[in-house]
Image (spheres, one colour):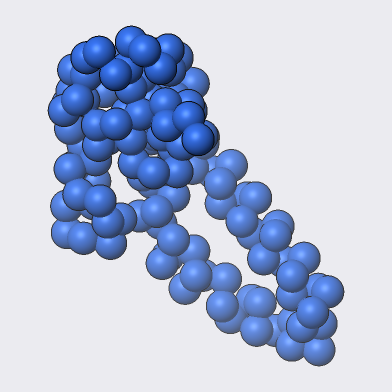
Length: 127
């Protein structure tokens, strides 16, 4: 499996350029430092904070993740738990609150991955 592609970097907290350095300081989205990012990739030195306000666009990515998750969650309830549809309404808010740190981190990684192309495998290994 090629470790320096955009999907891999978004899903596994890695630099979008080299696919090896960690994007966030902690590996877990559920720690007190879940929002602290490395300013540069520890492996290749790529700038992970290109300019002030760059990650405002990640708000839209986060919104898209929430919408997709809610639609999937709703269709699962409709198809498998239709008699208990009220539970969908009771459970959606706590579930979304629980997923907030995960979506926050994933949206930032996805936003940066749009603008930084992965380096070729040979170049990523040389750095």
